[in-house]
Length: 87
Image (cartoon, rainbow, N blue to C red; front, side, top):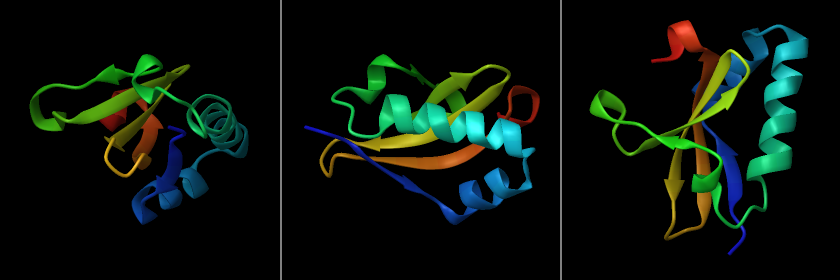
């Protein structure tokens, strides 16, 4: 099973507001690690509390929050941002 990646409109707006270098770093991480991967959970960390059911991927000081839909084999990028503001 190869997972596909989709972005919410909120995540796209956040990426557009970021510094181009940081946004490129995050997008390259997503392309290299998550697009067409067999097990996206091996790269991330399951979240607890208010974000239960979501997964976090670490890219330096930035985080990518995503939902993983195993039934439809899709990773939905919910939010991206600096670690101090993302949670």
